Structures are given as structure tokens and as C-alpha cells.
Image 1 (cartoon, one colour):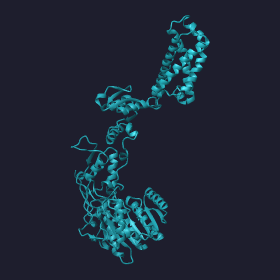
Image 2 (spheres, one colour):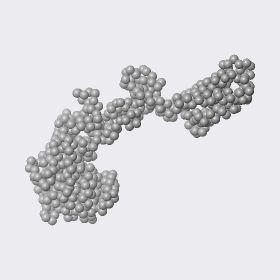
Image 3 (cartoon, rainbow, N blue to C red):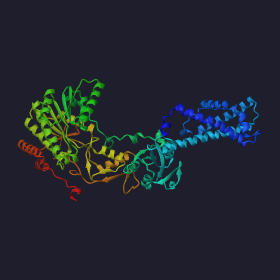
Image 4 (cartoon, rainbow, N blue to C red):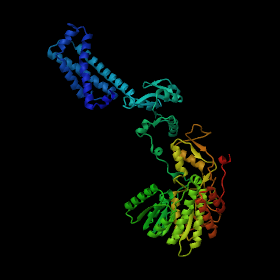
Length: 629
């Protein structure tokens, strides 16, 4: 039966309603004759009226088509439609009176009035009965989704009205936090306490919950949604009416706040100026071109108009994205720059050698590295091989190919590291310094490195993590109340890196001025408040988002350093400093790398950590509270 109803076309439905209206005409007449005490009795008058009945049926269908009463859907049959039905009935009463006078039937005016009123009642009642029959068919069909409305306010009430007669959704009940509504009936549905939602879901066999509580903040809605999803329910959130019509500004809520908003200072623009000439008409290779730093290096190097830019990247997706972006930029700005995307790894010496010699690379910006502290800590051999041997391979092959400049992008975590990632970056620095010592002369490759702290907004950095946690309703996780970090935007960092590379003379360690370190706890508060929410803590238990202290992770420091010594020299750029640090001798470097390679071949993580502990200055393992327990 239900399938037959669904298969009906609009024309077929219209004809069915017109047929019902036509059938109601004789019924309404019979009822009208029975209510009036006319001479000749009910059946004698009905028999005399039968000659007019075909005309009345035609009149009914004609009026129905004209007014459109047969086109109204049952689920949408409300006040306006009832009004049209009343007009239909009134016109029928007039038609009955006119036809009676023309045919010479001596019928009182009251009969035609009663006929019109009865027809109106029958027509409205027939549609109500049909709607309930159809709803019953849908209600008991096996594929109907049973829905629980969370929130019995205006939004929830309107939603139930909209869902009445929906082919696949059946609203079953309300739950609400307002105690004053408990036990009441809204839109003919019972309102239950939200604390009993598990029982309601089980008893009512609920499939989906619609959150109709737009007055609650998004984090609180997200918390409710997570609790319901754990019960195996599908959860959907409804906007308020003011949001739908645009009275509330949603842009700030829907668009994540820019990471640079949390810098704690004004973002400084460092125009490349004369430094751009160091890259103009050059062949530049950027390793790790698809990463956060690497991709920004690509964008800014493009502005310097090199003759060729080689994108060297291990991630296929990362390489694809930056390649497409740069080609679009070149096409839009009509630049004559050749883009060469290369999918590969810096640890492959044969690929690196062929790449450098085939394209005649003149400048190498080495940004490729595994940099996420917990992941490298859990995979120390992989991190050391990529960060240390990858740097060694790229540096040695660059020297052999006659590359003019080689710049290593390092990290503040390389200074007295407490984790394998930082230690791997320090070993990479030592490798580059050794290469600078061995090949450094007026005609050889100029090797240098630049060291800076956290980049706001980069993949895996704290601000995107906080924003993602915020979108899920919190909590925001901070490892320790005292943890602080240096921060810089990726645009600032890359501008300074390119300037540092341009002024390098060999073996320098460039250090970027990153301002004052930022407490991570304060940063978490900023992220919460910038989104329009309040921090929930002991002082404000009714706040929106909680900040959870999780304890230091393995290898994590309370604060980072930028240099091994306090002797910093200024450069021609006020935000770039330079220092010369002691390194290992050529024999010591060779010994350290040989031992590290043996650890990798033996797949011995403990042996690899022993190598790091022996050769990396200041390396120490931080014992966290979790480890101590």
C-alpha cells in the first residue's frame, strides 16, 4: 500500500482528491435533506434532486481546479488551505441554489446553506483522515527513521511541524533540560527529562537525535552530541531561526581565527629587498616543498623570479598541492619560471645526485625533516635516518655538484635536546658544519643553517590542534602550566630564512629574533576567548571550554633555547643574529655516523639513543611524571 502511494504521480493524486470531493456532494446533500423537515420526505426530495447531481459534480471539479484545493499536499493542509475549502463550499452552495431555481425545484435557501456547511466539514475531515492514514502507513513501515528532538522550545516545535508527514522521518518524543516542561505534551509529543535519554532511546527505539537547542553554545552542543554518539545514535544539529535568516553573524564562528592572531605581538613584515637578487634567475631546489615551511619557501622564492624551481617532496599529496598552486600563480602572473615536481626522498643518494647534476641546481634550501616530537620519539630510527642521513646525503651531493649555497632549516629543539627529534636536528647541524669546514673556500659550496622556534599555523603545531579540539567542544590539552614556546608566523620565518641564506659566508648558525616566549596555557585561553567562549575552570564552572593539564610528553621541555652560547652577533638584518658554535671534528662526525648506521642496520633503538647521548652536546632525557610513576 505504501509503495503504491509513493508511486502516484501529482496528476493521479489530484484526480483522487477531486473524486473524493465529488463523492462528498451526494453525502452532503443527503445529510442536508435529513436535517430539514421538507414536504415529501428525504428520499422523495433526493430523487427529484438527482437530475441536478451531475451538474453539481462537474461544478465541484471545476471549482477545485480553479481554486487549486485538490493540489494541496495533505501534510501542508493548514489554515490557508482550509480557507480555500470554505470558499469552495460556499461556491457549491450558490451553484446548488442557481441550478435548483433553473430546474424549477422549490427548495428553501436554508437547504443550500446547510449543504455548503456540511460539504465544508466533510472535505476538511476527509483530508485529516487521509493524512492520518498515510502517516500510519509511514509510521509502521520498516525503513522509517525514528527521531528524538532534543529541545522542546520554539526551534524543536517548528521542526516537529515540518517533519509531520515526512516520508522517512518520524518524530517520536522530546527531551529537554527545562524541568518545567517535563511530562508536558508539545506538538502532541511527550517531553522527557534529558537525564532519562538512555531509557527513552531504548523504549522508543530511537534511530536519530536532532539537537534543537541553538541557544546553547557550540561547545556544549558538541559535548551533548558526543555523549549521544557514544550510545550509537546519529546526531544532527539544527540552527536557530535567526541564524537561518542571517540576523546573527556566523562568519566569525564558522571561520577559524587566523593563527597570527595569537602571536602576542604585531606580525613584522621583512621585505626581501636586495636578498631577492640572490635567487633571481637561479635554479633553486627546496626539499620538503610540500610541508608548511617548504611550501611557504616556494611561494616566496617564486616572487624572486628564479629560472627554475625544483620541488623535492616525499608526500605525493603535499607535492601535488604545492605544484598546482605554484603553476596557477605562474600562469596568473605570467611568469617565465619552470616548475619541476620531484617525488622522492633525500636519503636516496642516486636520485639526489642525478637531480642536482641534471638541473644544474645552484641553491638548496633543505626543509625536509620529520619534526613531530612524539612521533619521532616513538620511531627513533626512522627519524634519525631521515633527518641525519638525509641531510648528509643532500649536503655531500650538493658539494660534489657544485651547488653555490646550501641552507639547512633547523630548530630550537636542536639546542641541548631532550628528545630524539631535537637530537637528530642537532646531528644534522653538525653534519652541515663539518661539510662547511671541509669544502668551505671561495669556490666551494657555502654551507649554513638557520635556527628558529615554533611556526604558528604549521601542520601539527599547537594552534591548529587547539582549534580542532575547540570544534569538538574541548577540552584543550596543555602538557604543563609552565610550558612556554617561541612563536613566529611562517611568513616571517621564511622571509628571514631567505635573507639569512643570501648573506651567508659559510659555517654560520643564524638565529632568528622571535621575541619573548609565549606561555602555552595563555595561548589556550586566547584560542577559547577569540572564538567567543569562556574558559571553564574552578573560578568559572559555568564556562564553555575546559583546559586539561595532561603532563609533559616524553622528550618535552618546559622551555626551549635558541643558542648553545650567549654570544650572538648582529647582521645587516635586525631580526637575524649569527653565532659560531663548536662542533665535532671530521673523525668524530664520521665515527658518530658510522655508529648510527650500525644501529639502523641492526634495528637497535637503544643503540641509536646511545650514539645520540654520546655525540650530541647537552642531550638529556626528561623523566615525566607519568614515567616516574
